Picture 1 (cartoon, helix red, strand yellow):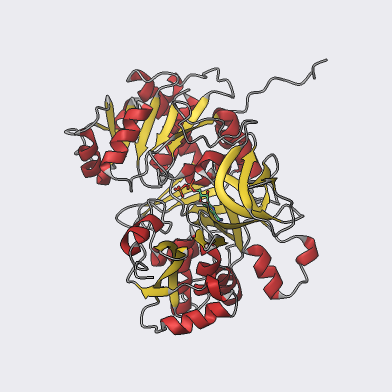
Picture 2 (cartoon, rainbow, N blue to C red; picture 1 turned 60 degrees about the horizontal axis):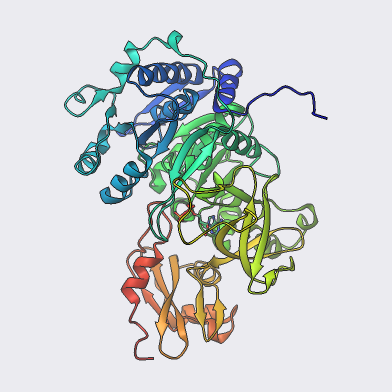
Length: 539
Ligand code: ADP
């Protein structure tokens, strides 16, 4: 017997309709390259999105076609987020920090029919176009001057009649968007999000035990729209009617702090490197920024140091929410909210819990596998985290490669080495490729980094595995000191010795000016490994 409920597809247009009917007056604020602010309403953004859909259709873009974006986070990019999936095409966000060769590969692999590109990124696009042909180039600019390179976005929009927008009968399993993995392990692979995945993921971000987004929120995504759909925030915000404050290209700590304060932002999200810089800015300028409206700052993408969570909270009254996810998971998988049992616990214990990656959000299921099968949820035993759920990829675009990330029973292997506690709280020890294997035992680079970043003089620290003639691998720490601060390697090693067994301590602690970052702002450990590969050659 079948249930007798309506067959109501879960699609991006359903989320857009909600924004259009219930939240037309909510705001979208964008920080322009010249540092002025563009202010408009959802009604206006949605009208423009409808015009974009009409214009793209007139150019011959049809259902299933991929439409790329090479763009910072601003209202025009949001318009593409709403327009492209709504017309049945597939929004393909390109990471503008990638090398032109990688971008060309990705554009070719995805078969993009059209691209929307920021005027400021045309030099990058021109390098790419030397290697791959893209039929339609539309330049996102507020002025003229695009004509020699492509079509001018604003001209296209003014010529389009939004009344000609048509309702496409979408299946919720149709593709809505795609992103490529960073390619840190082999060639970038395409992840294709369905309408259903985006919609359910958006819903999940509203739950109180996840990010708890709601219509009173004013949301500033620091995580860019070109990285895993800005963690799904553009869609969630439209769905729930949150104001969106979009930072454009200005992601430095001062700009972020000014925007947070100036727009009375209630909710923001980004990777740890952004928040480490914000913490330094706030520490250096007590009282300069009024961040009292901020109810949550989400950190994810790589491990959030406990000292950072604690510093933001204790010194600046900012509540930090640690979340974990992946491109293959749309991306949110777990969120760390303090359980009621720990509400009255000592601060040490509360912060230790909150530095973990958290419990799976509803509909995400987890398990971890060690050498001898699935590991118990005892908070001790390490295993590789496997996941499944309605917004987890079941395959990559163009099928599977030899190094299968999928289990025989369909679960996805994350490549993250974790322990799971009895309450389902996940603690990530490392990415499998970053673990240090010394004398047959594992050392968690994340745990060492966390402790090093707890030192008052340390701005950033990355620990890598370096080949060692006797122990196979040994840890090496690269440390960036805060401006004007001092610390010696011996002092840092003594700090670590308080928390870790002697054999865990990095043999070498080197001071560097900067730690190289990935396109998503995470520590680029492969570059450090290349640089320090022979550090322990003499044993
Ligand atoms: P990439 O880092 O390769 O660009 P993703 O952006 O998809 O790709 O990153 C996913 C990975 O980032 C996860 O597998 C995990 O290793 C790491 N990660 C994400 N969130 C966290 C977190 N809160 N703590 C530690 N690591 C995290």
